Image (cartoon, rainbow, N blue to C red):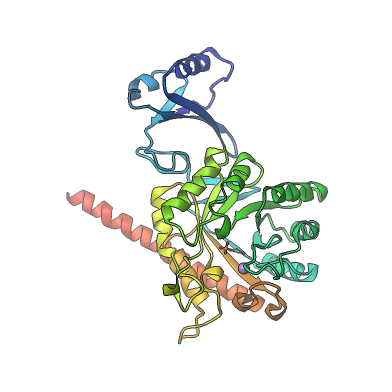
Length: 377
Ligand code: PEP
Ligand code: MN
């Protein structure tokens, strides 16, 4: 059960105290307070966990500081969608909105290699009206002898260049909680020229200590990639770890599943799960066409598979596209063969725009269909 308190509730006032006293006297019910920070106001939510079956809606609603009561199912308490749930399905970070109702593109380098390539990439993004990018600094590699990323050494120039080119959010994968600290320090040193979305990759989806560390901090939102060899439910529970520690600003990333049945793609594309994640949770959903497809193969019309699967995710309502680009793919230190080229950026963005319009038209069509049905029946 979740108690959503009235906006102006005074935490030192009598009404709040009365509620807290009542809750602390309940047997086998634990309460956790969450603060839902919005652009203008902060909402307070009290999550009641344990044996809440005997609690009556009306009784809880009778406390003057309680605005609404939501009965939650066991699954995904914070991030899930529950019966009569009107909690937000978006959040704002560094001037960018992340919601189930909009779309951001994060085109950028799989791995940072040189300052020159970072600058060329960011300049191109600005020229195309983009304010988000991806820049890998800590790379989890299958082979221990492969390039592992420049780590914290590259962060200062990445952040400064982001500031120079108006980039507001950079997705950066972290594989250890010390990386969060390094990112925070580099942002402070460079004067906070940009923002960072911490990315937790598919190899770390169930690294619970990393999830807890990313969940305990409130500075950065988190992009959690689904695990490539576990169920969707297990991955959504991993996302809930972040929220249960206090950070609800989570985007859920689909990036394909590991199975030989996925051939000829690097992974079996799972973008049919975009509307499923929307239905089950309040998280915006990201798709990663680069790590799903893993090549620049094209269909007979000449449209690359990366474009096709992006369109499939976007036309189903995806809210974020994470995609590898590189100014000189032959020189990329990681994943060059799947990178899109800079002269394909405008084309890629336009193709996404077409798919997004298709999605919006489909939503309108569905609304009209159900409105007409409601009139008749
Ligand atoms: C990445 O986005 O660079 C990456 C390694 O992705 P994933 O964790 O999905 O493999
Ligand atoms: Mn990669």
